[in-house]
Length: 558
Image (cartoon, rainbow, N blue to C red; front, side, top):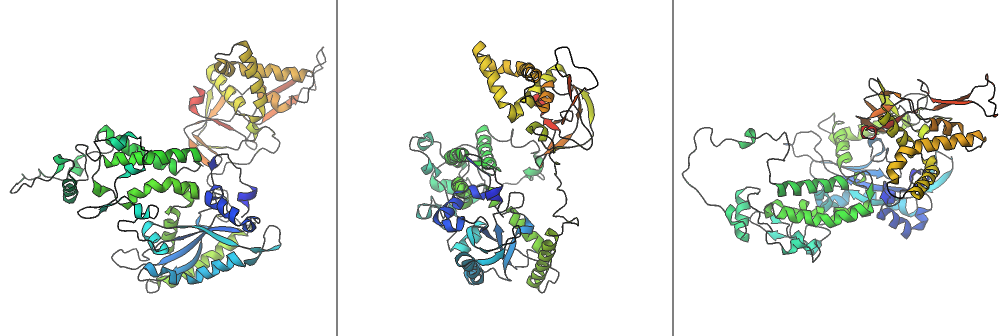
């Protein structure tokens, strides 16, 4: 529960945890007494309705209220064992706007946790302290948002951000949320574009969509021209979706402008949903999303743009306030609702079945977390476990944790691959930064042009001579590990199909198991040389019990 304070490594300009968000920092700034104790809990409140019977024809809706603790590290946060089902609103009907009546007991408990707190025992130190808690935000879909906050999610002012300024217009069958060019700068060329909503040949082709175009006076070529009395031969007017192969994607089936707009939209969501959010990236996404929506308005008719499409304009602002998206989206909650649905054994009393099974599961989880001598699903090695650091290594390149898998193939490095590999390892070792900078300055003094290429080719030899010179004068700077690193890797390597590095399963890379913990030994059986220097040998070696391999991507070996 103290990880965000004691264990998190801050990255400048990056948000990797809710503790990096503006909402978290604003809470700490307004209530410093709450921020003083890192054990105080920040919570998210999630809810959604689900049918416990799995039969959508049976209109039955149960609404659990789930608390999500955010003090936990990323690999535990948003995981099912740490969800707290604090309330279960029974069916058969959805609570709707009356949900505040059902939330009254939960709100009273949360107010008590905020104002007076609860005496709690610290499992790590054994001391008693007063625990406080606060709700940072809620997690729900857009219809549930309207029920919890009492905001209308339909109509002309459906957007909670824009409110009365929501860009909406009544169409034949629905309200369209269009005119996103208003979010563009005044000097943007799309504001003066005459092609807005007037691109040939692309439409969400329905009768009402074409009538909307006729009402707005645009895209006259797509207006309806009724044809009566037409008969087609058998099989002529078939389902065209059966005749089209979309295995190769959209490319080749849609025009370039349509493909570019859809590609930009997918790229927007890919960057927004990344594990690490950068403030610079969010600022850039905030600038391009109005352009993307304006391009879509030039392609699709107004009926395509419901409120869910419009809400994309505000997602970057939500990212700045709440941090990484995967701590606030509904996917883990929907999966949890699926597990609650599986707890129903008595179809006459689904709420009772869920409550009883939840209590049993919570007891088993609690016991499993504190049973250290018995293997449980909480203390066994994770699927992507990457091993332990070597206990005697001091250089980062020898401490790297990696676990290889797949059949190993014995290969021989070419001189070019060996040179690229050696430079990669030396440049990747943070302890050698001072040597890299010193060599760079020497190269710049010799010739300031092209020093990057020359450093990649010459640094290994320069570093080897430098360390051997320090070793000859018995300098403490020339440690055994630096000697081994200067000697370089073996030409013989084991090529595996993949590896696990920092908990991430990576395939299609070269696993170099010969870049291993260095073994340096002094040949004490031989006499010293005439100049009095010790004869030292260093080599890279590997064994089954001590492996500290390193992974090199294919392109780095070319």
